[in-house]
Image 1 (cartoon, one colour):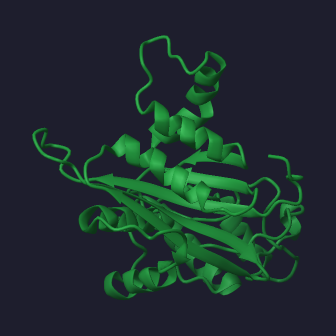
Image 2 (tube, rainbow, N blue to C red; image 1 turned 180 degrees about the vertical axis):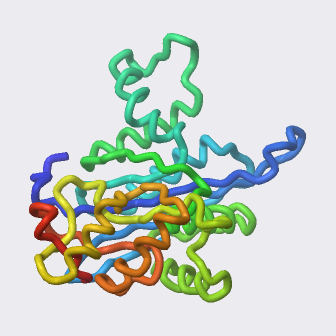
Image 3 (cartoon, rainbow, N blue to C red; image 1 turned 90 degrees about the vertical axis):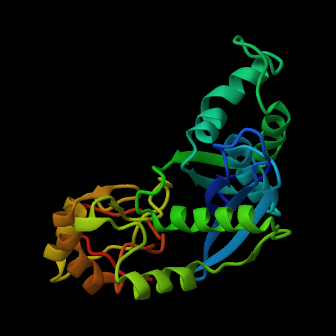
Length: 272
């Protein structure tokens, strides 16, 4: 990445993949790959969707393609927080690919599966500074669930977005709240709820100030309000009211990144 990374925009990508009919070996297995691409700009989230499909593929191949297509769609070098529920993809880019490349794209245990796709992804990734993050799938992470919806739909319909398209995430999330009365993926007793906050980036945080609502803020912070933190039903209902009062957020969602927080005793969360 040639551009000064300190001045490069920060982009969040939530990606997922799907492959239908994996249990059938004698027929084609259509698959889809998708990504929700986000960037915080001028006090608001800019969101775009991207998806591709393949008439006969595997989960692992589509996981790699979810990263290739999302990164390829970025027109300039960026600092990317890439979130996926595919350990194959996250471990591959974080651990395996650097070693394969050093050994001339050879693997001690035999041929590298999906080699061409890994090499393509490696080229795309080198344009950016990327933090590869794993999140547990189907565990109540709204953006991961939404990416899964896009991927499954692409696999079923064999469609391609042909690049970034205006995102339907907000409409989808509102629909989930209206029809289910709870965040998507929320199981009985609220087990597995996760807050999706842009705190993966160590340079980002929340705008926090001191005032009479310090006790409510302490309640939020003490319960580990951060990306991917699983909350019990007791925790969820404990933070729901102060979170709504301080930010206007009705259910786990995203808060705007601003500056790194100061000392906890002087903090409160201010919505964007």
